[in-house]
Length: 158
Image (cartoon, rainbow, N blue to C red; front, top):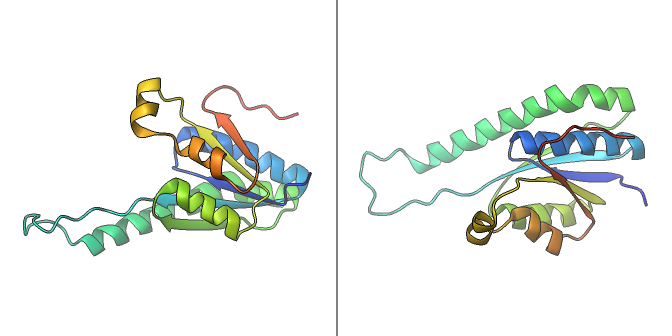
């Protein structure tokens, strides 16, 4: 099995960066290409909100611009040098809006990903029951294998 296209969802947390380290090494081993995706949920706007509310379009644009800058910084800081070192193609960076698990699965299908590498956040049973788990939904519905990387620990790759 070869992992030529590796999709890596990120929420910019330390746990996601830790999973990215695994994805980078796997891409190097298989001469694969990384596809990083960050998904933000759309803002909810109430029609009876006070007039002093900021313009929703401006806020959305600010969120997207911030996500794009942060994703580019992750690429520059963590991936760019490794691509050169391993002789890989430049990673593809994607910002999407919607429900994270839906957008990640949709992107995996569209990009024909061979593997999804993502972190787990180690929520408590109550948090998991109330909030659900993006990772769990992706594992159940993904069109390809999913490598889940538990947050924390020490990164070692053989």
